[in-house]
Image 1 (cartoon, rainbow, N blue to C red):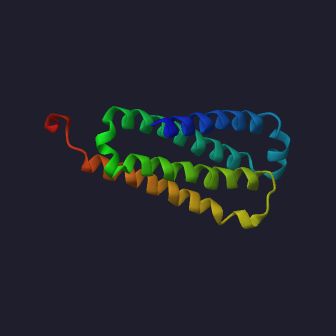
Image 2 (tube, rainbow, N blue to C red):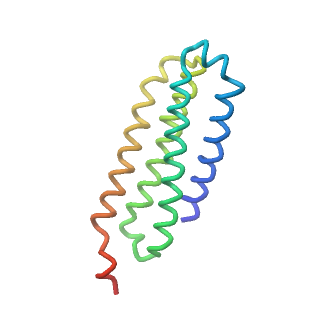
Length: 134
């Protein structure tokens, strides 16, 4: 739970900072490169998944240690924590003129995001309804 909350905080903080940095300090460069949309997409996906990590931390904290053996929530958090730097990080670098060879990294981050959401679905399907809990 602590690691998920810490990751959420780090990715949330840096997402806001990078959003502001792109809107102000890098505005002219992003306009010149025609990559404002790319930067905005990177920020959006980073912040959405930071909030999702925070929700996971909360959900995992409520379930307690008995769910650790089938820790699909932890796997989802790991996937999203890998996906953010791969997806958003590669987009940030591409937006400021990074090498085009970074392009194939972006979809790997997208796959990590999708895998994380899949882990969340598996967890939800495997969880007992509240009415069945002792």
